[in-house]
Length: 306
Length: 223
Image (cartoon, rainbow over all chains, first blue to last red; front, side, top):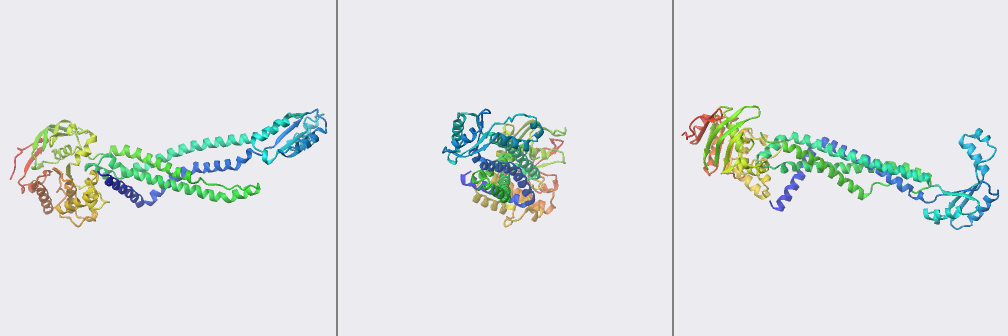
């Protein structure tokens, strides 16, 4: 067979299988919709994760440093240290929270009011909240500043308030793993859905396959139109999944912008982007092809003329 | 061209279709297989087309022992064979031209060549001009002729037919048989299974009468 004949034959089969799918628009649409929904779920989670990471990326910077003074330091020490720190170029602001203020705040918010009355002594130290200057808000610069403050006289400890960001990143890492797992399971689902659709298609066209084999068709020849059907299912399902995700991004855009506005942030929801979108369609085609290959190989082998 | 050597065929349900059958059909011969249903006519054709394998014994086609053909080689073998069925076995959602051209498409013949040979084959069975029709738009006799055109489009040296006139009235049946005779006249070996003894008496062809899986009468020519 010449290359040209071979190419022409494949193009013919490709279009032929598309025509066959178009003859049953409802059934074809349903299969594509199932694929699309299965793919859209992990994709939406991916969009959520990516946007959360983008929105919180700059939170790693601009941490305050909490400075706890020695309990035995003189009363004026806090104000003096604050003045000293404000003079540094890498410090934007220093807020003094005296031991009394801290106790009052704690009494208000903790609900241990009466229990605190039992104390004869205020157990809390004076505290300074140091905000690094914009130019010195990288994690490294903040750490340098913290070390400098920690060695100052009468300072008990100085710590950066990063715990909750670490926790947030931990949660995002778990979400990432959840996406990988759902993606794998739903990808398997796509393989099975397409496989089952192709299996039914093959059973419906059993007599046609028998006739083909009678006049000399190989299993590969009989299988080809079904593989192309699988490719079309994947292509349709993949694009439909992208459309679903984009629709969700558009729907979420307005309320998220409003929320971001309340925080004074210029943040916008971003979709999957062209690269990932292309990968999604490619992946959908690959999974659907795999499903149709498995089903067609298995079931066409079993059909023999009688 | 065809040699059956002590062929036994027992189906999984226990029915013994062929019981030590032996016969030879020469190159370019036209032969009728006759006998009651169940006598083994269809089994012979199925063994020739490698739809079934013998339980015992050997079948040779054109000098080749079919027992040596592995499953992978079956498609290639069938392409050298023309087969006609009682129920035509056409693809009803494809036009006549696609039905007739199917063996050539499968064999990977170039599109222009297919077109030419399909028209030639349709011309031979008197259906030129029906390329774009669907099978169900044609009469039963015409459908059978499409089936014959498909069988001969690949220019096989051996043409086998299982009750090709089974569903046709006598006039149409005669036409179909004459069609087979014309292919035989140009050198194609033709084997036809039929129970229509009256019809074949009009042809000076060899007849192999079968009964209970064996040759029942001398395999001589009946004029």
